[in-house]
Length: 197
Image (cartoon, rainbow, N blue to C red; front, side):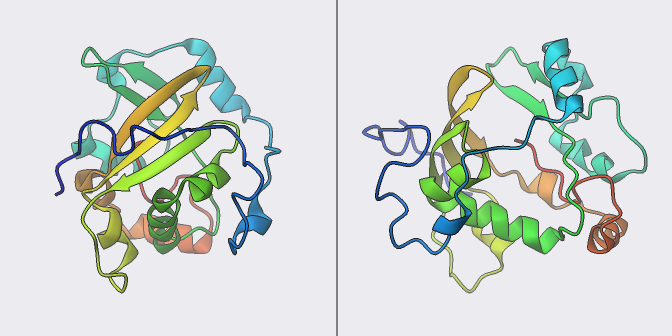
């Protein structure tokens, strides 16, 4: 695993919401830029309205595989604030017909360029830079991002955060095959790859 560089990778960065003229010139994915977002799901609004939840309710990375269990857990949506300054955010995201391989591709692809990261959440994402080993581009996508850190500037609610999001192998390596099969059919109620974000 690569040691996280401090201070943040680019102290001269100039993050901003949206896209400035020319930022997407020549990018094959420019056609996907759409700053208009769908309304926030009701279950997320409810979770935010509850405020921070007690940290003991959060799943530890070692227990992340339980996200693939049948039914719903106690802490599917919401957030907790920890004494060390870290935050745990849990969000149930329904993604029918999305396979684990697609999730692996997305998490590698979006982390490598700010404009790509902004496609994900245009009203909150401002900046992204990847810190990790240089990996052979023919390696599987998962091998390209496991153990690295995504440095991002993004709004969490109305607060701008300068975040370091380490990609933890303990969370991403425990996907039971039944969750993968369910995702392939598109009938699972959970994201087959439990991702702590």
